Amino acid sequence: MTIRVGVLGAAGRMGSAVCNAVHADPELELVGAVDAMTSGMSLATVGGPDVGLTVASDVGALAAAEVVVDFTVASAARANIPRVADMGLHAVIGTTGLTEDDLETFGRLFTASNCLVAANFAISAVLMMRFAELASPFFDTAEIVEYHHNAKIDAPSGTAIATAERMAAASSSWAPDPTQKEVLPGARGGKGPGGVRIHGVRMQGMLAHQEVIFGAEGQTLILRQDSYDRSSFMPGVLLAVKRIAAHPGLTLGLDSILGI
Image (cartoon, rainbow, N blue to C red; front, side, top):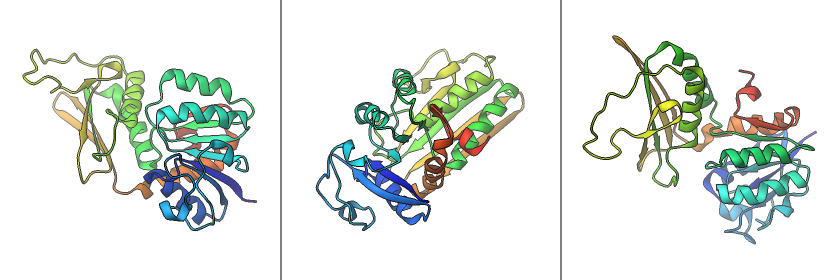
């Protein structure tokens, strides 16, 4: 039995990659695609597979799906995801910029179906965040440097914030920042959860990369994860689509999906 999947943001780079990955998976069936910017166009015309689907403008077009994958923007997700919950469909969300209030709302709404929100679907990135969490109690200082393509509109990335949150939860004994004067404002990056400094790079030639740098007396540890192509996110997305039905309510991150 195949799982029927609909995609929000189907004409975006991530959305079209999801459409193609779903179509290529024999356990899944792509049954709907929504993108307000390209509604009325053939899905194949905007980079998706040639499956005879027309891109719709309204989430109601995904009623035949069992799972809806959302890679849009936060404002669109706030409008669309409550409707997905009302329709009794499961949601797999990779949209960044969602707030704690958004997550609380989703948690209240998904009672008849389930919802997963992940900052990053690359399995290597999930492991990097877990390793950073494990390392945190053993170091005095830590900083995060995240690198993304120049079309990413938010900074720092959701992955960097999620990493800092997990590090802060794992250790509350970080050494104070010794900097007394920033010659250039912002040179020390943004102060993230737990006081962990986060530096964001936006540059042509990048896709999605992150370093977590730990320091203690006489030693450093650097954890680095690189996604060179959007295909790196697809195994995690497909795994979430296949397993979301077994994870009631709201799930944050891929950790429980992966069993780590």
